[in-house]
Length: 390
Image (cartoon, rainbow, N blue to C red; front, top):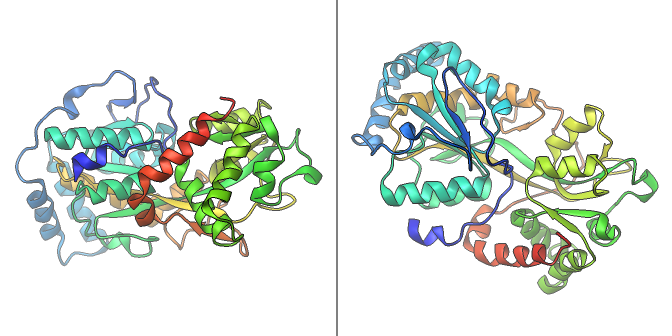
């Protein structure tokens, strides 16, 4: 299954590609990004013992404990581990900071975390290669929806047995969402007035010529709009819907890789409008004074929403630390910390600036369907991107 999956890997969303930069997370941590130099201490050692049995032993130690008593015992178990703790993650270091700070507070020097950051498809490719070689690389994996689903289907996660999953949107037996990702059209308000702003997806794809910017890896967003909106609501055939995107590309639309870069290009005026920005990032930048619009005169509907999820890798060498980090991310405090960064938290009880307003139509990425037809939709979208003006 792992080998078959490897041939299907293509780009994805949440982890923007900023290859080559080096950052730091956690106390005395080594943090690298794709393309950067890397301390291989945490990525080349073979698995030691049975990781599944070791994690089950942690669960057994926690059985019957609740609240502060459970957390205290989990911290003791994590503090006793000596293996390095590694997270492969689509979040950048600034966004990880409040989560790693809590780990530092509880574990002190033991909180060293090697943080490998890249876009989701790069991380998934690395996980597949390490699985084939039986490397013990990641302890915790944090990926966008299509990639976390693919990793789970490949058997890369251990059971996730924790009470903090309660109240988390769409949690499973082996992974849980930590944020929701919502895609929205957005535009430079200096270039596009309210009178000229898009109202429908047809407007986005048809009205802006070479001033439209597409993100080159957003095949999940593309498939969801084609299937759920253009075919499901507008009554188009698949061919007609795909042709709308292809026509936009052939009319001179640009393509970029990475949602951070996409926002920068629209905010700077290089392009007038972006087709698939992250709702949380647009809201964050607009509230900070950037000339970005996305909800005036109205939101282009339906929005497309996806998850970013996390799980414990099957070859973890630090199962207690891995479980502790996941619980610190999914509990009320961790979810509030992500909400404070304008992410849309996966915990329903947390209020956030980036919560989708009542009455806005939303369609969700169907991860199972997308996984089954990943190569088809990735290839179609890639062919569209290849038709853009670059």
